[in-house]
Image (cartoon, rainbow, N blue to C red; front, side):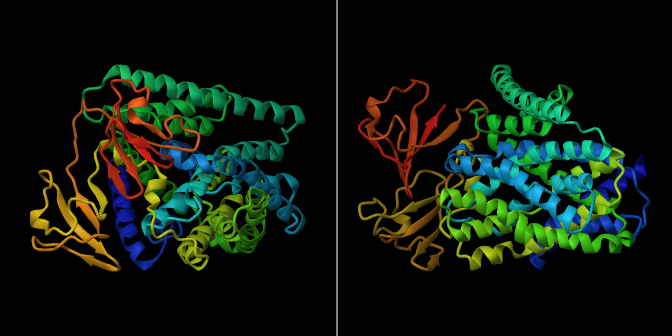
Length: 530
């Protein structure tokens, strides 16, 4: 037991240290975790024998539960709304098209049996949110035309579909598949997955608000239990546990519960650990001396998916919405395979499915090629396609809830009538603990002193104190859309709850302190205090 704990600690610390250096080397961190696993495995430097697929499946499933829950928790409703339909189609029909085309390739080009071909297509059918956004976030790359939100929703929600297809594939290979059985399976998976994915988070939110937990960190413990229960209860009823977990994350993440920023930091850490464990175990279980046997089909499958199957699915769906060609190309390139495919491949082996082809090591190589090749070149492809949005921040795609716990940094644009215009910093009347960190003037960045003069057109980055009170109200943002009932109305005409005042209005780069006659316009971001 002691030696196991020492090994576990050493692996985690080594992966974290390697992650730090991987960014400087331009190598995706998930690939580094895989290589560390190989180093510890039976063919690696430390040569630790390990082939317990059953235990690995259970560990990886738990890790995937938290990745799925946080994937939903991070979905920001206002950012997701414009791309919801397209993302939903990509996560359902997109996965189906990709899987069936890959099945066709394996069956008719590689000469596999139909059951194995379908199973392989199902296992690698989904894209991986963690892989895509580990690249985008590490490089702070925001994408034009809401592409970051599109990829986030698609890659976060397509794992349940791939899981259902994988279960059907296992039935086909095992000879248990019948038309009625498959239809019944899909209906049960969807019905219980959706129903419990709505009921469990709603009950949890109600309970969390009524419990009024006093101890620090108990919200994290509570939601950890909710994430686990969402999967377990749905699966025990025959539903799609991953679908329930993802829906629970979305509903809870967009609810008005307290301490959201702390929750985001917690689940960010848990998800990071989960990724380390999954990719490490993939490398740890692998036997590199067996890879030459499967390298040809693995490379061919990877190339087929990258240049034919994935683009066919993306173009078929996005072009019907008149998406730009370069957005379609980037979305096709961003179809990285990762954690879910790994877990499903381990599930196939752990379930004792008898296949002629070594599906585990084929998926191992497909994941390596995808993360190493597509992941490494994703920033380059985005830049070449002119898809980088220099004015945006990719973190705003997510429910990072910086707004919910007090802003630490804010940007102020100095207009002609601004009270700070043409004043020196030392003469500016600022609230206590406010600090001007930098001034952006054209292409120049100025780090101001007391005698620095603030000019019209300057963009100021200002540090403001966070307000951390356990019993304080929660700040919530809502974007005013074309059909919003508050659009073009002054505040005094709004039917507001007396306990839900409007704290501020963000209009472009300007923050407006509201008055009774302040009119709310389309695209305003209204911050309410709940």
